[in-house]
Length: 158
Ligand code: HEC
Image 1 (cartoon, rainbow, N blue to C red):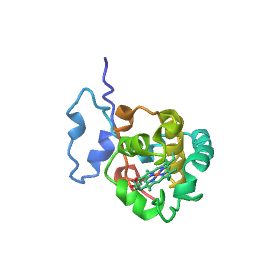
Image 2 (image 1 turned 90 degrees about the vertical axis):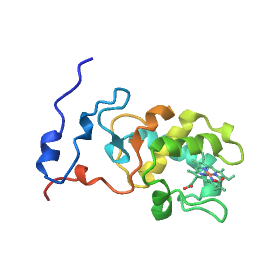
Image 3 (image 1 turned 30 degrees about the vertical axis):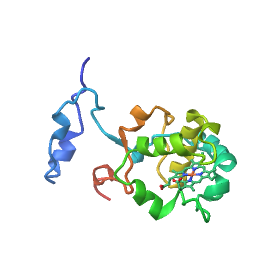
């Protein structure tokens, strides 16, 4: 398999910010570029489907605006984001897949849970993209959950 060698190196190394060229350690199984929630990992349409499912299956406990209720925590905002910061989208998905809805986790299929997760991401202002969020944890575990947009992905100059 031909590796795509044309990477974004020039930009990154030109910045002189002491970045390690770790991307060159070609760890076969890993995607060569790590993805994050900032890379447009779900579609708007999917989030729309997820919204309907959320309202049906999650809102009674987590609140209509993902703001939490007496018992269940908010799924948006500062606390939620810092809870998951540094973990992966797969970790969050697994949490939902195995334990939610708390009263009967099997009521919602993994595919539907991916849609709900897309809605949660969209509600938290992570950007939508061109392909849908999948429901395979191995794949989702390669996507970093980062509370704020990584420096390297910010436009270089205003
Ligand atoms: C019957 C009430 C109930 C329902 C319905 C429910 N949850 Fe929860 N959820 C909870 C409670 C209570 C907690 C915190 C205690 C726990 O972890 O079990 C929680 C925790 C969570 C967490 C972890 C939050 C964090 O930051 O640690 C996530 C994510 C989550 N729920 C997502 C969902 C999703 C998505 C749905 C719908 C598919 C859903 N929940 C439906 C009660 C519920």
